[in-house]
View 1 (cartoon, rainbow, N blue to C red):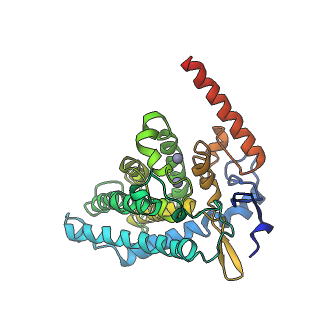
View 2 (cartoon, rainbow, N blue to C red):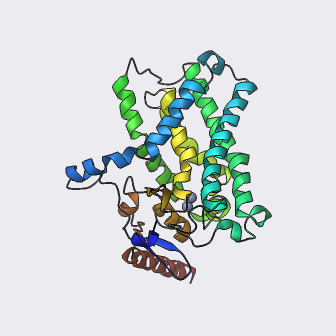
View 3 (spheres, rainbow, N blue to C red):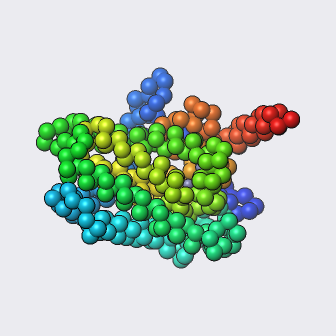
Length: 334
Ligand SMILES: [Zn+2]
Ligand SMILES: [Zn+2]
């Protein structure tokens, strides 16, 4: 597939799609119902539907019975940890294998012209981005995700919290299920902005940003404090009437789903066609740091002036903002 029909490549080999990034037409004034309807399938496809399917399979076929969950026991806790590790290992691993090890589509649609494995850097454990990402993801990422899952499923099993069933409150659960991607985005924008401030950035979030050129293994490569904050949105299920199926969907969306922004390619070729990854917004965040704190489902970055739409205009606005910030800092220092 000719990627230059959809974008441009600069002298360094970095690819940029032609289409500007747009926020979802959910929060626009005046409302644009025709645009909203045309966009609606993208709310579900491909990612949210995929993570809902993962959550459903896990709930129906790979979660212990309620009586088991009611008592803490290392056997079922260990099982959840192994199951989550296996999902991440297989899904991320397959993407890495195809796109980064076999390099099945070469550089086509790849935002950064270089592959992480080709560049050694002192900021990483063992000077390798892949090893560093791997150790952090499986060392603290999946265990902290699993700990949240263990606590939530246990609280459901002992009946602590506003849990309900699809028979008793179908609409409440459908509405919460539909809102989960929005809740996750709102929470992520807030904690993400927070950990970009002062010492929190220096000691915590910089670990994730070491991967300036992210690949799937970078998705959950974070400091443990960021892991704790990142998955804390799951506590919303102790506030609104919910069901463990929605908890598992939510954890898949935020856990496995962290890969969405870190694929590193604008499109993944499949046969004669290609799937849009929706990864460009977060790639720009890794490249420029203080832009695109959220992924555009809710236009927080537009509202707070941190949006970069990937165009030359977007770049100029960002530079203007960075220059103003530098001037402010110089003024306070002098
Ligand atoms: Zn990231
Ligand atoms: Zn960040």
